[in-house]
Structures are given as structure tokens and as C-alpha cells.
Length: 97
Image: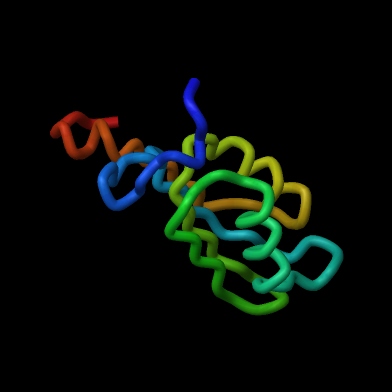
């Protein structure tokens, strides 16, 4: 394993392999898209982060090599559903999965 930060995303479009998308539904406390986006970008390696919504429902989109960590975090703040994790390398190679 080399230094993670040496990845040049422009050169390697698949530096982060899994296109991870999900919805977070409010469980107990209000959701805050800014707080969630900040937490994800500070704690997880990845790029192309989008977090949009309101206090009841947030849509997350993130490219990462560790989608399970994102799901685990999101599940800790609300109910998660409509989860899609796509392997962009397999897709680009014309493989299904």
C-alpha cells in the first residue's frame, strides 16, 4: 500500500472505485446535510460527494473504496434505504455487477 494521498484523481478516474448512493430517512433527530457532508469528507477517503435534502430525508452520493463504512455511518444517523453500490471498474470493462 502506497501513500493514499498520492492518488491523482484526474489521472485515475477510478481512484475511488465504488459509486455509492443511498437515502437516509430521519429516525429520531433532524438530519443536517451540511453536517453529514462535513463528517463524510473528514472521515472517509473518496470524492464526488453530494449530500442533498432536508431534515427528514437526505440523498447521498459518494465515490469511495470503502462503501460499507459510508453505509455504517449513515445507518448510525438514520434509516438507510435505496442503497446502490456500483463498481465503476467492472462497469467500464463492460461487466455486469
